[in-house]
Image (cartoon, rainbow, N blue to C red; front, side, top):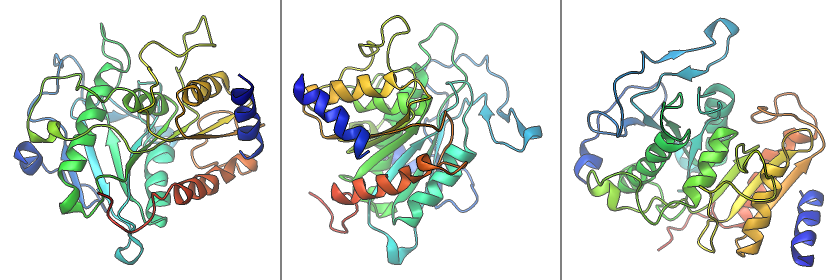
Length: 302
């Protein structure tokens, strides 16, 4: 317990088949955009309306009614390409996807660091009769397998494939970081024979990490083990900080390498830290963590 307490103190201070034939969907600036599922996605009933931007009048992007989830691949400049890749999971309470501040701006930041950015558009809103994360987890597992199946084509190292998630996307990132031994859907093709374990994870103001009635334990769908990938976490004291600290304690208990930065203020939903202040330094801390972990070296890992 003493070690765990010191860890928190330090953290506060330091702060093939279908894979070959997937349907291509045009996207501006993207190297490739692929639909995740051939035909209808698992468990879809056809009762969701057309996809649209729910807050277009507010000059924001909040996509909802996603029934055809995709991944869009954005490459850095060739001279800066490290071979690493990160899948982006935007947030939005599992009802919308904030693909502007937690999508486009994030992929630009990743590209600037020589990282291939892969934006996951997972299914929202929550499906009636299913856990809020159920369809998104299917999409995230499928996406990671597809990415590894296309690793040679997209010139990425399949052993340096991580994820970054924001809010509900951070929750999704934590769940898929601990749910990879078996797919939660029936096998589709060779892409599902690839690993769906991220090699590292960055969780930025993750949400829904504990039950509402007990913040001292993790939600039952998040089962941390010593196989959970190394994790970087960002949270603020004026947010639901226990979501992050409870997860950190579980990681430390399982001896999973982890680093967390807690800022005094920042609230929630700030993306790269658009309002400035100390919380806007988290991308720099993340870059340092990625470099220290060896994720940005240019050698292909075996």
